[in-house]
Image 1 (cartoon, rainbow, N blue to C red):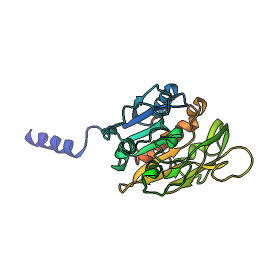
Image 2: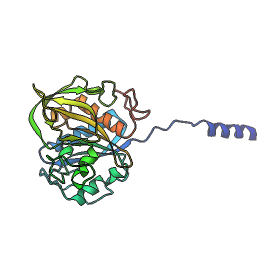
Image 3: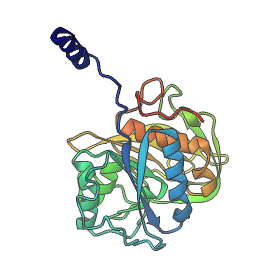
Image 4: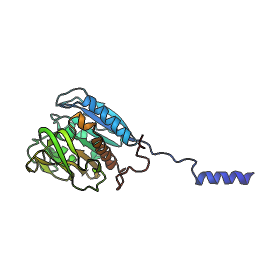
Length: 274
């Protein structure tokens, strides 16, 4: 009897009775501010991401539509504590206080990955966004995080996407994609960002204006924090497009180190089709 109990105990230690699934990625989604339908887009994003990957999306949102939205993260450098990644989808063009911007950047400087959507690129502009700023200067602090500096956009027209490496797992969903009405953000300068896709509106070739990088990755600070960004995502029709939601979900997986070279989520981080 003792021998039988010992064998059972040894077997139990060597062979788990079940394989525990990884815990969901904890995502903090920040929305609010000028010029976009964040009230709807925040829920489109939450639903779309949670349907695609093993994740729980927590929202910090304000209905304020100014360029200085009173988001709860401001002044709190620990706002991302306990999260695996932060999605910046706010439009805070006139939040310029260097101390406030430093606090927004603090979690990313410490190693928490970031994903940045659309007007997140036109937020936290300490200096003149139309002037190329030297990396490492106070005026460039937000652009250093992004790896690219943008200052504005043209009209709302379809954008034709050109994926630079069709084998890249992050951008596989947007190969051959032509968006609906969207804003094409310009490129003032690309510093440390790695371009994944370019966008073009209509005819002509105006690098940085009519032909711009619209999807890219970056490594930020001495922690080599992974940062994914796309300037696409102005209108609801784009945000709810399965191609866009796949792109954002892939960006989250890449930023957190959960995206395989085959374009599939790491074990336990995908969702089976319904």
